[in-house]
Image 1 (cartoon, helix red, strand yellow):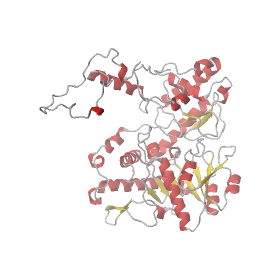
Image 2 (cartoon, rainbow, N blue to C red):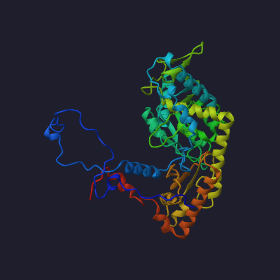
Image 3 (tube, rainbow, N blue to C red):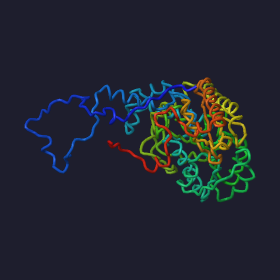
Image 4 (cartoon, helix red, strand yellow):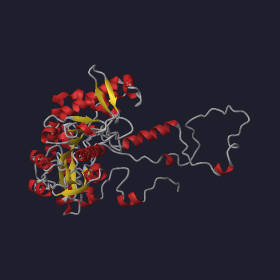
Length: 491
């Protein structure tokens, strides 16, 4: 079942153990006569010995970095089942459009009349996102999801101030996305956790009790981090609005219902959209990303500036000043080439394609749920959408835990799922296959997980000491985090 063998690759300093002189580049002779480059430098800046650079030829350098690249796991390598991350395949047409000179070579301070195509693209993407969400307006400025959350919460604060109200509390369900409490605090609110009901969703009785006149908003992840849809979202929105609050919807899991449901009709006042997740831009490792925010009529006056406006003659301009706005969220206008990729994806898929995308994402998650539910425990046995959250409680009886399962998956050639999140599921295994993997890949992942469950019963030590086939074996993660070595020294 294992799909590839990974060979060890030594550090580049170790590639020439005998330290024989090998030259990868020929430098031209100095063309400055009668000048000693060493002699012009102060003595205190000169080394007493030669630097320990690796002596390698060009081919050896190329081989080294090529082999390192083969050790990296990527979406193009296979299934990337990180729950809540939506690590899907990125169509190459997206990259081609992002590399068009008319987009890639722009400068953010060019006059509007020189960048009409770019402004038109941003305006069209805003219109597409308004259609997808059923919301009144969109800002493309935020750089990623958490930045989008902050943007939405700042607009909510601005709207309350415009009403002459000062509310300090934001309700955050324990099944919400992990950044929500920090975002509320950054926006100047006090986050208060709401416990989930037995189905893993918000209970109306709990909300009714906690929704006081101090509450500015509720931050609701839909579907929540358990992969469960808040099926009473309409009633939740009505209750929050009747008490004078606003509803922030975390859109990290939008991939579950694009083309099937509209957050605007659910009662959302603000919602960030992870373009790099739902609409396929390469992400991970810190970027790139984009987190546009869609808003209801209540927040429309407070959208950030600058924003794109379309004149009656069809031309576009940037609006830089609006006294009702929360202001600018960054120095320039969003992650522009991410916006290009996202609109390319939306245009290529069309309405029917986007609907089919979410349908298949839900289907695959439920395939995983069906195949693994006999081997792994489901704490919340509610209907799943795009992701499903198991836990390790059955395996823990043999002292096998979710980290062991993740390490063993590496031996089978798969990237592990999201671990130990959401926090309300101890020993969580959060699996999101996305729609882009072929069905055979999803089945093979399930086969690997079932095989590991059997190993945990029959030979738990095999799982507890995994991985066995990777160049780097099990690492002391606590020690690695606290005593990280970033410099190689010879023996």
